[in-house]
Length: 248
Image (cartoon, rainbow, N blue to C red; front, side, top):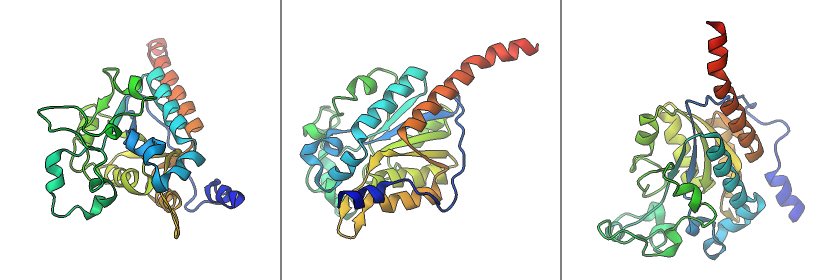
């Protein structure tokens, strides 16, 4: 069974459609991480997604992406998932029944700030990166996609239209953010080993998401590839002023 699972997660030898190259521009790029919170990435609340999180070494890989982006100066944005008490009065919460009804991601009323449920907090491994005064912490998305928060606005205001996308979960919030970004004219590369999906009898959620990523995203890459690309684009940008000056 372990070998079977490894085959499921392996890179494809003849992917369809064929892969295309997406080259980052330092002045246009941003790292975006969806739901880097305890309720997503802690063993306490993994449920069906934990197996995929472990297979991808996802917690460590997201940490590497944070570190690389901060080191090279590429902006980082976080789109978190929060529910305030009044959100639980919704009459049609079926779309988020796995998060909304159990009470995860709960915060106290906005006027009082703070978390009603510790699972809504950032993963401790990421807190220093997120709370450094430079990370864009968007208002919360309420279901799966960013339509209800200021995610797209925050990126547009900074003229960042190339997104390296990671987080949870592959077949829900990451997929929904990807689709909205594509519809809004962004270029998006999904980091496939920095996301994960639920495992169900029908098959893994990550695998179904990866099919969509192949057809929707501009690129599908690994954490190693994203870290290398961050360094390349930062280096190219740093060298640009001298190159321009030499032509004058």
